[in-house]
Each structure stands twice: as C-alpha cells, then as structure tokens.
Amino acid sequence: LPPGTELDHYRIIKRLGKGGFGITYLAYVRHKDSSAKSGNTLVAVKEFYMKDINGRKGSTVTASRQEGLFDKYRNKFANESRLIHSLSHPGIVKVLDCFEGNDTFYYVMEYVEGGSLNDYIEVCGQIPEEESLRYVRNVGEALEHMHKHNMAHLDVKPSNIMITKNGRAVLIDFGLSKQYDENGIPESSTSIGGGTPGYAPIE
Image (cartoon, rainbow, N blue to C red):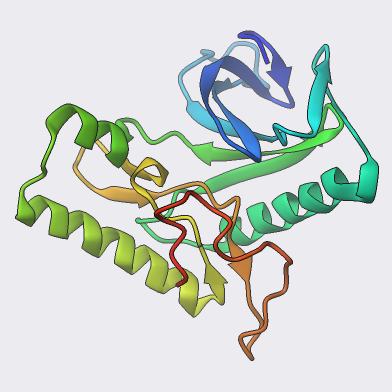
C-alpha cells in the first residue's frame, strides 16, 4: 500500500517489511477529533498478504481461491491476532487493534522503535556475552509466558526479535504460532518446522 493510504482510523507512512504471510507498515493514528494533532501516535499495521497467492487491485487484496488457502490462513491470522492481543508481557509486542478491510485482515501493534536483533548483529558483529544473555533471558521469559497460555511461537530468529531503545528484546511476528489445548493437541494446522531454515525451533 502506498504512503497516505487510509485504513480504518490509521494512515500509512511507509512499508516496514514483508514476509510470506504479511506486509507490515508504519502508520499513525488518525484522531476522530479533527482539532487533535495528527501523526503523534505511531503504530505498526500488519496486513495479511500471502506472497504466492495474493495480488492487488488498487488497495483491494485479490486472491486465487483454489483450495480455499487464502481464506483458511486469513482466518488463522485473525484468530491468532486476537490471541496475541490477550497476552500481556513486556517481551511480547502489544497488539492494540484488529479489523477487516480491502478483502483481507489487519492487526495493529505498538511500534517498537529501534531495529531487529538481526540488524544489530549485522552492524555490530559479535555481541558481548552479558548483553547476549540479557536478550536470551528476555526472549525466554516471553516464550515461557506464551507457553503458559498454550501458545508456541515456532519462528524465533534474530529478525523476529526487536531491540528497544532501552535495550530490551521484544518478540514479534506470530505468523507461524500455534495454539494448543490443555492436552497439548494443536488447534491449528500450521506445519511445525515451516519457518526459516536454520531456525524454526520446535518449542
């Protein structure tokens, strides 16, 4: 979506990234009160968009309906955004809102200023042991919180970990996450190990 596109009460500023199941944009909240100052609240908006199935006609997302793959995974995306919204932990990005539009689904997250752990490693090289262990603890505590709520992330890797300006690691991108019932049976059909080669831990 180009800069300036309006989605619900958000306006797109630029694209932040694109993956196999979505495109993430930087946006600001459009205030309902026209007298309020615009652009002072930044958020990240993730659009459900499957790179091998979807296209676009204007702002509308188009899709091949073969085998119902788009509908199936869009529903999964919507359900998991609501589950993440229910999680509250400093090591997990906050989901603030979710809505439908343009024949697809969106969810809105807090914008974590800073960069990914992957970006940090590429710029700085080897990270000191004490700092590395701090990030491992942050992510481990976030995963423990998810597991207590019968969820597994399944795509933990440096590019899915943001480092905040105050030096805390925050887990993002739940596109491959799974919800489990009390007996450990998965409630969704995402294949375990379908993430990035070399990562995709089996939690």
